[in-house]
Length: 353
Image (spheres, rainbow, N blue to C red):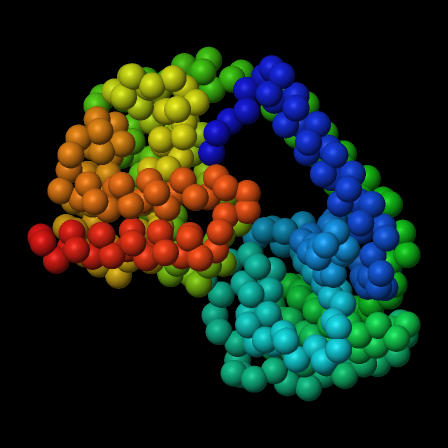
């Protein structure tokens, strides 16, 4: 997480963002298939969710209705995906469970009442269409496969606080208001961030030794473990109000301990956090408290002091693997090989302990 500070670099970054959003909006307006959404009346606000493109052409669009999060009130998402030929590529149960975990806005959604989706009907363009539905008591999600204007579509609806019988779908012919609202929020966020003091100007207590690194690492590892335990549904959860402060304290400590400039220190902290979070995500041995504590301590020592720690082989393997992420695009085979080498180096370290 390198923060782009005020100046030419930030201005260029913002312009790239605006150019990309303009291109995205043009692609969305030119979507080569009908985009479906809720027929009125529907929950507000209405916003653009996720969307996907292939070779610059939109293939999947999600619209969101209602306030997301744990606040009371209905929340609905409607996703329209174009399918070439047989739409059997989609794993229905996985798609339903992912959407339920997201829309239910809870950390650990209970499993569906049934392992398989049940038959249902959903009203699309005033015509009842066959669908499959899964309900976990807190939220439900349904999928329908149909042709509209000779285009094969998969339509996925997920909802909290609104029964299937209480909604109908229709074409959304004009995305203009939704895109304008999205751009307005983006510009408002930019204006707000420009008026806030830079992290360099924050009045924060200095960290003693590696205390700043440790506090940030502990918080990020805990969040990774929580997300893993919840099946990944916390991947978009907010990082918390203290996150930016922890990052800044660790960055300042890294600048002091490693005698690095800010950009180099931020890169080092970024690499360190990702290293430890990936261990928490993928290394089975990291669940053992003693091994995890030793691995964290050695990683922090290596990053801040560049000492030759017992896990030096794994630390260097991570540096090679992490460095490949800067390539555009990274070579998949090379990334895979570097990741395997990193994991093997850590496993040898475990076996030596």
